[in-house]
Amino acid sequence: IGESISHSKSPEMMNAAFQKLGLDYDYSILNVKPEDFKEVLFKLPPQGYAGLTVTIPYKIEIMQYMDEIDPMAQLIGAVNTVKFEDGRMIGYNTDGAGFVAGIEQDFGVSIPDAAFFIIGAGGVARAIVTAIAMKKPKRIYLESLYYSDAQALADRINSKVFDCCTPLHTEDDFAPYIEKSNVVINASFIGMPPHENETPIDPALLNSSLLVADVIYNPIQTKFLKAAEKLGCRFLNGQYQLFHQGKIAFKIWTGCDAPGDVMRPAVFH
Image (tube, rainbow, N blue to C red; front, side, top):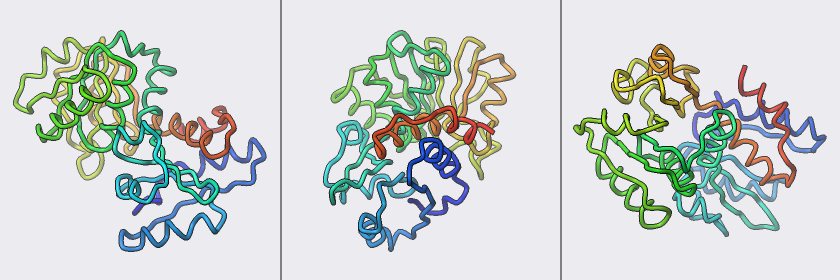
């Protein structure tokens, strides 16, 4: 459920998984206008819906309608997955855990041994920073166009999760912080249309020892990731997060382990 989300790859991924396990589920897209959101939401459980993936612009708004919210989603301050159970709505957030699973399982990152430079302080950034902080990294350097957002997120993480977060001003020299980092993550919208010709920071700050991640998967390779590849960095786009958070959501709805073997090709093709 979201607004203008017809481009999503999630239906192909989820329906492949349901078919593989012979489950009688169907995953489809609900494009809903903001003024209709509440009314549509409350009509879904009686129609036989098992749950939802929630995307822009409803991840925060939907929280007020939940009967229960998972502690991780509570900490992040956003819900992106809902389970309808016995007339109740339970909210979760799989964005952060999905991203973390991608860098751990596919790229071998050990979070307690790593330092992170993260760009952005919006909804996706909040989820990623929270999930990384829960695993006690060496450090998180957090940069946002709006210092007050970075500072608010850092304060929240340091007081409620783990004291590891340093907010940076946009005019700071990022070089020494990136030098101390193992992973650089763009968790902002810079790189998506209409910003596809921009990069979130100067790519000249990157070096070949870094893993460079972008939460964007449209385009498949942002200008930032192209620059990272040229420098010899390992890199990943938002497909990994989409895939791994989909597996987590699948388990929430069905109680079954997700068949990653059929979900992965639906995302990475």
